[in-house]
Each structure stands twice: as C-alpha cells, then as structure tokens.
Image (cartoon, rainbow, N blue to C red; front, side, top):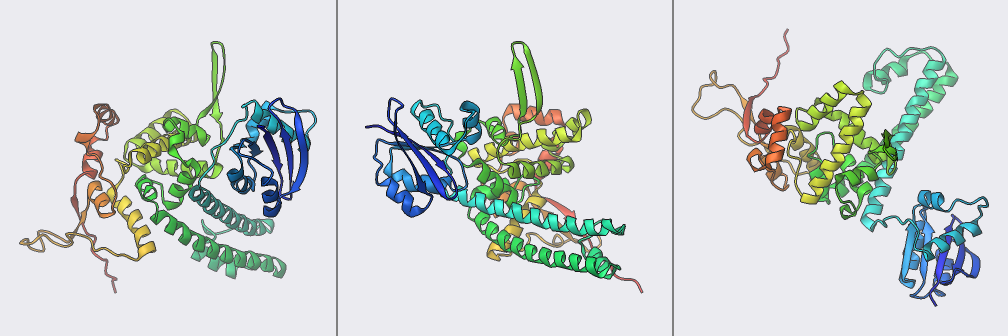
Length: 433
C-alpha cells in the first residue's frame, strides 16, 4: 500500500502522521528526534512510502537517515507551505497531517537538497559570518562605553594600532576600564577563531577551481567566492543568471494586475549573507574602469547610490553564473590586482613563491636612458601562471559584446589589460639628515 508520511521535526521530538492514497489517516505518532528512534521508525517504512518534512536545522540529518528506506523524500520550503496551507488551528499534529496531505496531492513546494560539499561550505561561511558579527558587536560595545561618558575618539578608526594605544592611555573610571578590557580580550579571542577558520576556508578555496575563477572578478576574494558558490549550489537549477539573482533576492519585487504593473524594492529572499557580500563587491565596482564600473557610475548619476549597488550586484550574479557555466575567468579584470589576489591565496595555502618575470633594465641600454622597470603581465599571462582557463581577447568576443564595449568607451582599457606592458619601478626614498 502506498503511504504518505508527514514529519513535523523539532529539536527533541518528531510528530509523525501517515495517510493512505485516499487521504485517510493510518496512524499518528510522536517519536524522539534521535538517531536510534528514527532508525527504529525507518524499519516500518517501505520502498513505496513518500516522506515530507520542512526545512529546519536538523532536517537534512533526518532526511539522510530515512532516504534509504523510502521511495521518495521531499524537503519543503516552510514559507511557501505556510502560504498554501495556513490554518486557524496550528499544532504539531495538524502540521504533520498538512504536510502529508500536500505530499499526497503533489502540491508540496520542495527545496533543492544540497550535497555534502555544499552543506560544509554553508556551515563554514555561516560560522565566519557569525564570528565577524560577534566581533563587530564587541567593538560597538566599547564605542558605546566611551560615548556614555562623552569621551570623543580622536582617531578615525579606534581599533587600529594608534587607536588602541590611545584607548589604553585614556582616563576611564576603574569600572568602565574593566568592561573595556574584558571586551578587548574577547575581541582577541574572536580574532584568533576567525584566523583559524579563514585558514580552513583558504584550504577549501584552493581545492575548488571555481573559487579561483570567481576571484578574478574585482571585489571578490575567496570568502565572497565561497559564499556565492555555497549559496547557489548546483548551477543547473537556474536557467540563466537572472534566475540565480532572483534566488538570492536581488531582483525587484513586482505587483501586477491587468495593465497595471509596479516594481518595488528587491525581494531579499534567499541567503542574506551572500547577498550582503555581493553588495560589498558591487560597491568596489565604483572604482573600476571596466564595463561594470561604467554601468555603476552611470546608474549612480541617474538613481541613488543604493539602487546602483543592488543593480550591479544583480549583474555580478549573472556574470558569475556565466563564468562558472562556461569555465571562463572574468574578461575585464585588472591583471595586477588579480595576480596579487591569486598569488596571496597560493602562498598562504602552499607556500609556493614565484619570482617576477623580466625584472630590471632591458639589456644594452644605459642606466640613465632606461630606469629600473617591472613587467605588468596581461590578463592572459596571469591566468596561465595561475592555472586558469584562457581569457578571450577583444577580437574573439561576439560582435554584440564588442559593440557594447564601444558604446561604454572601454575599448582602450580592454586592449590594455590584454597586453604585457612595462612600468617604471619606484626607487626607494632615502632618509635625509
């Protein structure tokens, strides 16, 4: 007999409701949310059974335990389930039966089940987010102590070396000094934990070629790249970059009826941490000479700054989706900055150092005629050195993309980054007596 099973999963217990193909309740039960109890319950299941549960902290562990014992298991989106089956009476028993009935009718909005690698990345990047938030909270608490007694901070950044020296020497009452010293010790501990976690993240980033691809985008380091990959998961789920941006909540909200259509602020659905990191990367584009930088500055003139940030972040997701799909680096990256980012990751993980090429003066030229210089490699050379796929030059781009670059006025920049060029090396300044 084919059965449909709804599970309302909590931290300590699981409410179970089993119905048949006609929607009649077979039995209802409450079991402990432990591995042993779930395995005992799984022995009663058959390959014809279907199981439904909502996303919770431990939903993936429950789903992994039961999956070998049933024919199908569906993990649903609780926000969409609530919109479909909102009831006046809400109990664990009702919730479990609602899940079972929706599963029977094949009307349960499911979510994508991430693989083990994606789950690990989400846990690591999420932990770093919370540690950084904790450090910010501690710093704000120290600022609040100073503000409470009207002590102005004479430096722009309190937690730099100069600011910390001032903080150590400023006159504070003994009680407040104890509070400040306590928070400073906590900040030191959190800093150590962040450093240790970032070392683990660097190892993960080095083992994933897709991370180094995304690091060629201006404003994206390994933390941003890992967070984006963890948030998106399997790219085949998205038809294009717009769907990926919508998944991260970066598309405008729409209210449409008949001939009336209103666009509002972004939906802010999906991974909020990845969305915040993308907006930070988008603000970096304001200083970039490439096509996305031109887009940002033009839009910022017509609209407000935040609109330009969100629109550029949305474009960044589309660009990242295409890069990962086509296995291609970012075509308009600054070669020097890109080389610095990638080499910093390489040295931190492997310790491998590389000497710069063609360093010094050209042979056969006197010192005064040709001062010391250094080679600034092209983007193609940087990708070769770092083991990345080749970058398309301007001539290899589609005609439509070439026309867009001409319209934006970035042809000179594109040609410049695709050529090796030599720049003068700054001579060290000597101290005067």
